Length: 100
Image (cartoon, rainbow, N blue to C red; front, side):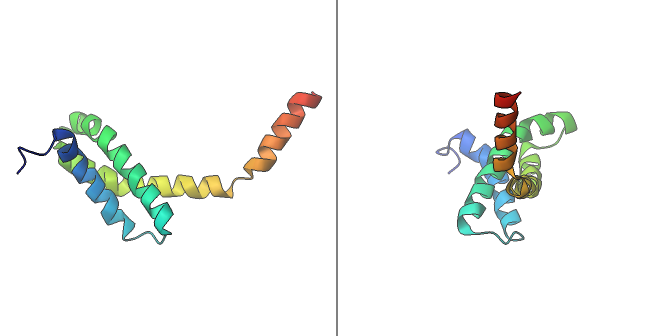
């Protein structure tokens, strides 16, 4: 069966699985959960070969753990972005540039 599956898909599965497992602990809406899953899978797909090379581990193992822990990181980034008063910051920056 693995002969018919592209290697890119096989490389992405551990990270996507790790991200899916991490979703079990996050209480988020479906849309935000899907975005977190996609972001965690994306980070795991691109970061696992680098980490596997430096730690001399299997890419699948690295992808699984990166998928698990990148979900927590991405979720925290979303929370910080939501707590920032971006409208006020942008408005102050613009008024400083125009009035300065």
